[in-house]
Length: 352
Image 1 (cartoon, rainbow, N blue to C red):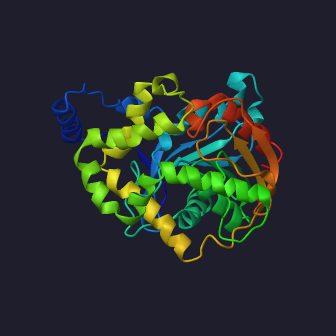
Image 2 (image 1 turned 45 degrees about the vertical axis):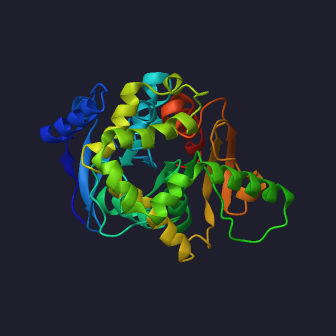
């Protein structure tokens, strides 16, 4: 385990030129994100179990350390949370109490952004173990909380399930309980049917990521326009866009997120996260889920995956908060940062 090393994003000029050249060939205007935007907040690299993990680390204004780790998913990135940084770390700047501030740790998942590629696919339960070591062994937090959506919700779930001795509470803006057990509960059967119907319509990309990752990775790694199409379609369909992506996400936001995949050629390695999750599931690693730590669920109305009934979630999670948000979809931190930050802060004030 190494001490964190200060890190600044500096995309090699030849990589930027390749991206610009590829986009020009496709007759689209080049607009890579500015490194200065990313480097406005302190970042580090630390070796965790042999994987160099990139992370933002902001120390908040509270008089005692209150650690909170935020985990993104695919096709998101650590950039998703930028609009939460100031509000969660320094609430007094927004009319709140300074002692409600958190120390934020926002890592890039293995194989995404500026984190190194793992030697083999890793799933969310394994990543939860890495995050424990990052928070406790590397950064010295004796106790912390976790938040996430998409794949980050699964990582945060396993932090709460496997590491309750150091994890005080978890907050999720997506929750998908296991479907491996038989049920005759009418509400659960209705939810399962609705969930599977959406999966039939929306999960072709996932099947490709799980079963043929290197095939699609070859295309996405070779052409930034192909990657942009593969990723941006998800923001269009999964966000609360009403069919107009620009109503929720600016071009700068979409491009900055894409650059976490393009800058270090991570379009392919990121896909292996799905393979890692599938391998964990196939080994029965999801069957024993039980989260004992206090859990908050924030339900955003335009989340494309149907929410399970609370009664189903409570079989697997210690649900202490169940919030129905007014607006927003799958990318809650980008779409509704004020509402998400407020829900996180209010819930964790009782547990951390």
